[in-house]
Length: 177
Image (cartoon, rainbow, N blue to C red; front, side, top):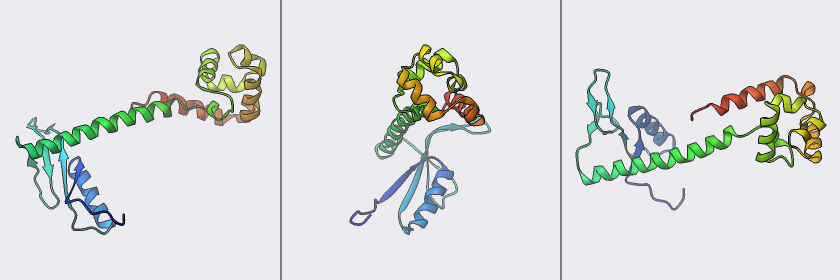
């Protein structure tokens, strides 16, 4: 961005693969002189050997083992804090994504009503095929039941889309990312 100075060093979280992506990105954006390094977490090799934290640099075949040094410790702390923050965000976004439903497109249907309907009727397919009266018995108001029918129609009209949406919702509910 105009007016910003490039850093002296750009540190990437990961090993050789992530560093390779950063090298290509550096070239793509036209800053080939930007210094790069990647910091990889400890791992066990295929031979069972324990490797501690390692630093990779472009053009160097072997990793640089991290020894006790305050500057390197700062890099590790930055990496660990970045992991914590990104994992927290990923979990938060993942939770929201898993809770999405076709019912979210219906005006006046919030998480509580959606939960009641799915709990009482058992599936999105059943919600879509239910009559307005059945939706009301399951926890929707008359206005909400009318909105569901107006927005999503009957199960027969939705057909395979409802089945696909339900399968997608089930798959999303059990994703671990």
